[in-house]
Image (cartoon, rainbow, N blue to C red; front, side, top):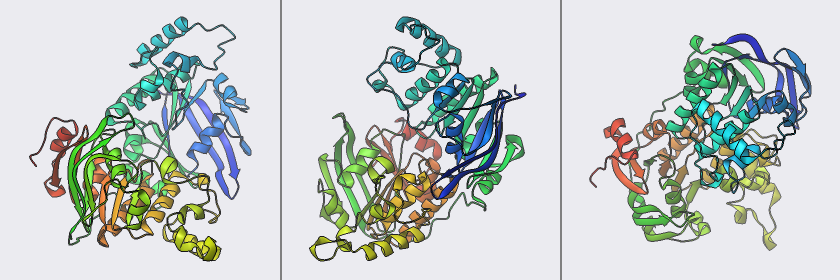
Length: 506
């Protein structure tokens, strides 16, 4: 039950970065025992505000009160002492260490000597209390992503957190793991802890929240009770306009086969077979969607097609030419675009500027004699793409690492679509994006379909697959369980195929 006492009160919070006001005079309150969602587009200022509360950033102006007392939070250590814990999108665990070692690492615990067996006992008590399934002696490197997140939560609870901040906690979780997380958060709230849930996923916010605060461009738009709003109203508050949740697929005459995969086998990073005897094809003007739970070979399939992972066996043809195990630069020259699921780690070089990322695939065309870059041409080209793809960046010289997730994805999309690809492999193109950026990316994919591009769409979002694709293929443990036209797709059957419980005849 929610207590009217305020656990957190942030007044007039302002934070500036070069060229942008991330938080502009924000007032934000969280009650004891409530789950309060902080909702907004990528770059709206959600994470910045919570980084201030957790002591990672210093505010330029404002005041913070914890349980009614004004506090100064100069570091995470200060925040932890006040009972504030934060679970970041990217976990801060040491893979070779055990669960227990990760939880007690760097924790002084009132200057007592922490013995591992005593720590294990305390961890098991916390795990049992909140319904965690965790082995304190297991090394983190052997845990699933969902299990690693639970270790991060246990670490915060072990250190006495009464206010827990979770930054996009479901972006790496499967649906069952998300459900389990929500059960844990509700238990925490029921016992009087306060949970701040940073997200852009409207369905999840409507499911888990008691109240919701919406940010847009660094300002608070509104704070509402979940019972007094709707998904559509929240979307409008986030982006400042009506959002189209279901886009209409353009009618396009499907042409000849562009991508033809025959009997493909691919190994994963551990040397295990991740793709097993896959046959599929994609035609001009067609979107073939690959559905499946993460980790069933989708990533390895995409990487083999674009040449960044070797095929063990089988053949890949593009426009009739055998391109199996050809180098990426050769496939790029053939008009193959690739939107990788890891935009920061593999898709972009975030330490380079926006311009440098945009011209990276057309660099040779930007050079003059003696291989010197034509700076004027590169400047005009990057400015055109920034405008064409609505990339929010102060200038082409802006470091890519300063862009929000949505703008990083637009940057990647701009670079890949500017080459006017014949084949586009789009892997998780809207993962981690807010509703406005998601709508934009999906519209761009449909535009590519209309111009005749063959698109292989890999997504864990079944709604996205069914909304954009002409045909859907389901992968389970590296195999294609079935391929069928979307108009004939049955959600129940697709779910059974995703779980490996059903296979369609080829």
